[in-house]
Length: 89
Image 1 (cartoon, rainbow, N blue to C red):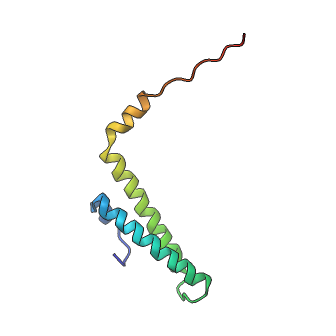
Image 2: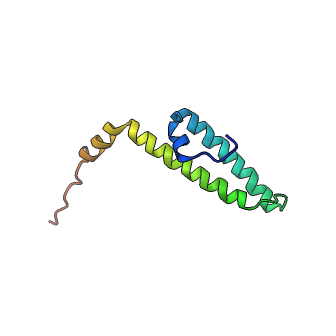
Image 3: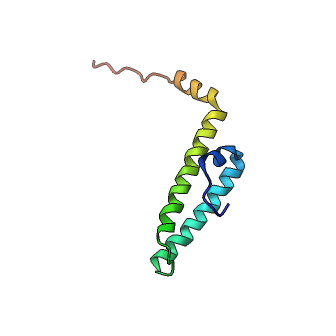
């Protein structure tokens, strides 16, 4: 996926596909950052666009993961053990 994906397209992807795309985008951002630093990249705004796209992907991944595991969320909230009370003697 070399072009910018819409949020709807990202939501249609499987979680594994999305993770692979995130890894690929991270490598691309690292290369772009290096190119911008060495002043070989002409389109310096590309770095910013790619970072925003990665953030969008990570947000969708978090939302999909949370939707896939709603029972864990409810168990975490109820299974907290209260801290022991400290009393001065």
